[in-house]
Image (cartoon, rainbow, N blue to C red; front, side, top):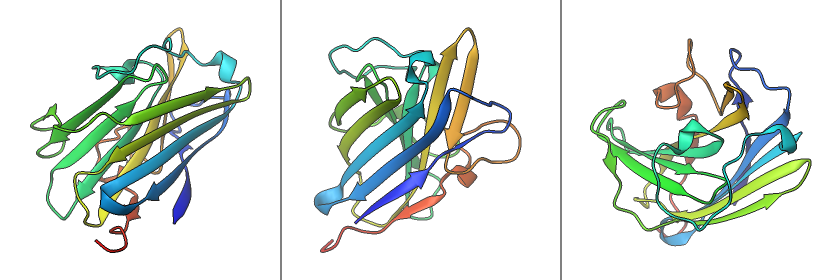
Length: 179
């Protein structure tokens, strides 16, 4: 079963180039998660990294990228995934709020990009580290160039944008059937 979730722009970082930003999430057997991020609007106004061979890379959040945060159980630890329109990706494990960051031992996600004048879609297929029910945060950094950056998430905490805040883990994914 899939869910279509709407990301909201942080009120301090408006972006008139984006009309809507949604994510379709579908959790399958054996921890598989399929995500499709869809940006509609004036896609030509977005600063996008150049398309290249996919690989693990750092600091993808410095330009347009899509993010997934996953927390299994009640503990403070979580995993962060970054997916860039360049097809680069990153995955980090945290022991607590912005603490103990380390590269996550995970297989490379499968990424695909579709770009049109009015739509940008990034599909990410990956295996979650747990078959248990999880809380997730979905977010995006939209770079318009010239220092203009917009932050999008399912939910935002009070104050400045902070995707690591517990308030951003605003959706649940049930355990896969048969798990």
